[in-house]
Image (cartoon, rainbow, N blue to C red):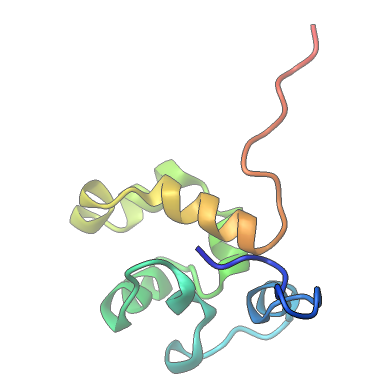
Length: 100
């Protein structure tokens, strides 16, 4: 898994920069290729489901994305992708527990 910071310089990695960029990349240069095992087909499917960047994926609702991806969403662990994207974008991977 890629780290959010470059180990050599401590500067934000390309993934972190992509997460904060305003413009959505094209499929060919999508930061979604950073997902482990991601290829053109998966990136295309995510794009058709409205997920164009790691930031979109980090903000996605796992249940809805699973439904939107159909059979692929049932086969693959969408929640793992979301966790990866949240880590890459520097977001918490789960909501804090509610305080009674």
